[in-house]
Every structure is written in structure tokens, then in C-alpha cells.
Length: 118
Image (cartoon, rainbow, N blue to C red; front, side):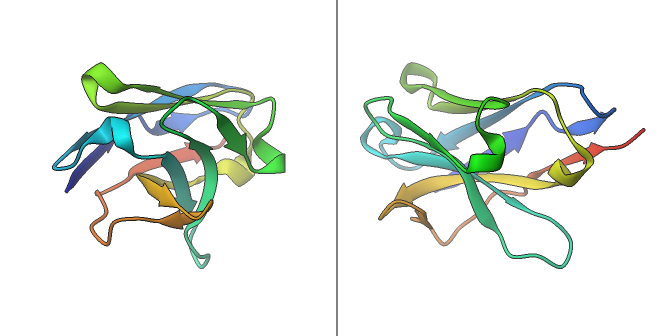
């Protein structure tokens, strides 16, 4: 399993970013996928998930601001993040998801840093 996240950066509050995750080593289209994030001192938590059929689910604080999507032909997962807040600052990771919130694979990518600051 190989997961490569990209698209993070420094953005001002209210700004937008689009994260990408390219997956390999497994049949991407068969798996629910999710974006997790980890802020310093915090655990890594799921923030958004998408089933293999395209149904989505979000943590309440992300609803209306974040949009998760996938392109199975490209083995790629996306997270469009709008109206970013300083509390969104974290390293963002992707993984397959099982049982609603749990990461499937032990191997994580390097993540992509998102920093929201003026």
C-alpha cells in the first residue's frame, strides 16, 4: 500500500485548499476512503469519508466547508477545503476506512501540512 498526499500549504483564514491523495497497492475502487487529520498533541481523527459508491460523511465542524470526492480511474482521493479556520491547522492524511471511522491500512503516507494563519 502506498498513499501520497499533496496540496497542503499556508493559507489565510477564509481561504481554500484542495488536497489530493494518490493511492496504489490495492484496488482503490473497492474501498471506502477517508481524510484524517492530526494537530500537534492530538490524535489522528477522521474528518471526511466517502464510500466506494460515492456516499459522503463529514465531521459536523466540516459540513458545508469541506467536500470529499474521488476519481476511481485515477486512484485519487480529494478534499476541497473552503472557509478555512485556524483550528483546521493540522497534517492531513488519507487512508481506506472500515467500520465507519477506522483506518484500514497500517501504512500511512507522509501527510500534507495545512496551516491556516494570518
